[in-house]
Length: 171
Image 1: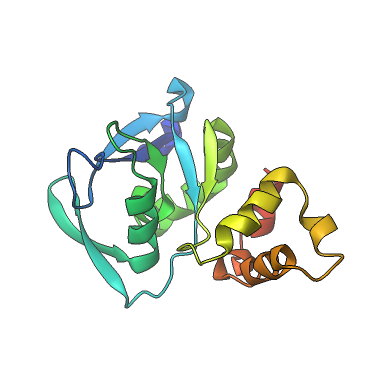
Image 2: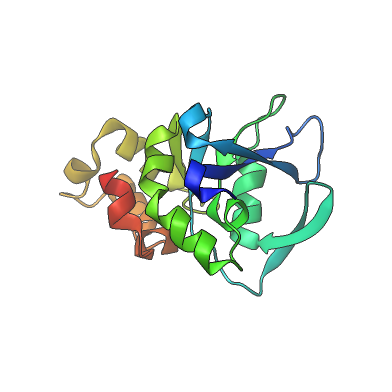
């Protein structure tokens, strides 16, 4: 990447109808070109629990949690463009990592949407997320109910323990 020109990589997963297996392409863009993209927040998960995917025609292995997120977030019939740190930042290049961490806020702010992958759905996670969407989680927690139980199960997920969570929520 040419970090001097604020160049970044974006991931373009193939739509489900075009490819039942997980395939994606990487494209280089500059932030100054105002690329249309969504940013993905997630936990990497176990480095030893990996799943295959095709990236620019090469077989690569990604963590099971990232694979699950990408499988679920792919659109049915049209591509999605995502900023995904594990794939869009060369993790073996310390200089690149340092430079991109410095502009991470700009990458999130430039995104049309920031998606938070909390993990696979559980039997009551939809109920918990409905409470969050309606802004009612604080009211529900004041009494014991099925809804409060669902919300309490959502809170200890690994996503909330990530080191960058406070910075991301602030942005």
